[in-house]
Every structure is written in structure tokens, then in C-alpha cells.
Image 1 (spheres, rainbow, N blue to C red):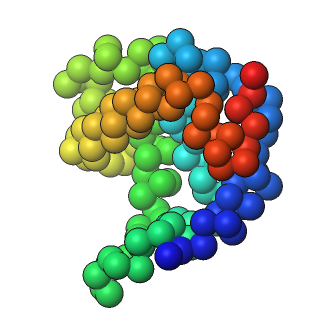
Image 2: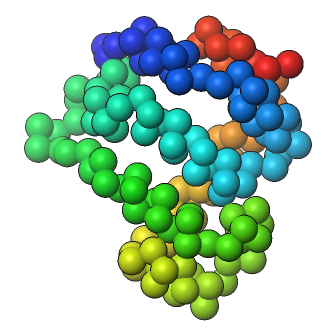
Length: 148
């Protein structure tokens, strides 16, 4: 079943009310940027090793026995985002093929890694839009203030 209570407790310990209020305001306006994405990844990293955090989620014990979580993947994602210009982080739509090559080169990753990150970001952006429309209800249900 996982250890959701411990996961929520860890999230509450790392929780910054001011940042949450700013993020909620941005979500309400559908302005979730790669900078916000990076900030959220850094918050997850503060909670401990990714494998430990994921182990607290219900259903994660059903993963194949040999499945390992690559904690260094977060480091690669951070490197990719840090290799972007501020404008690219705020307006990801401007990232074309040549920019992807430059970002990959600057981060020591491949263009495929950059493409994968962009896809993950788009999925996260959709999810955040959904959360934003929910008025912070999901945060309140987890026992975290919604920042109104």
C-alpha cells in the first residue's frame, strides 16, 4: 500500500508556504514554466533519494523486482534546464532543433534526453493546469495549505 502518511509528512517538512502561494497563482494563470518544473524537482530531491520517495507511493511494490530508479536522472534534468537561457526556461515553445542541440551540448546529454525532458515538461504542465483548475483542492486534501 505504500507509506503515504510518511510521504505527506516529508512533503510538509519541506513545504515553503510562500513558494506554494506563488506557484498556485501561476497555476491559476496557466503559467507553469521550466523554472517552476526545476523548482519542483529540487523540492522532490530534498525529500531524499527518489527510490525511497517512490517506495512510499501505493502500488510501487508491484514494479518488477529488477526495476531500479535512477536517482542521477534528476541531476541530468537539472543540467539540461540549467543549460537553457532564461528566455527558453520561461517560453519553452521557442526551443527549436538548433537550440535543443546547444542545450544538449551544454548539459553533456543527448538531443534525445532534451526531447524526453520537453515531453515530461508538457505532461507536467497539463497536470499542473488540471491542479490549477481544481483551486488547490488537491493540496488541501493532502493536508497542505493551498496558499490563498
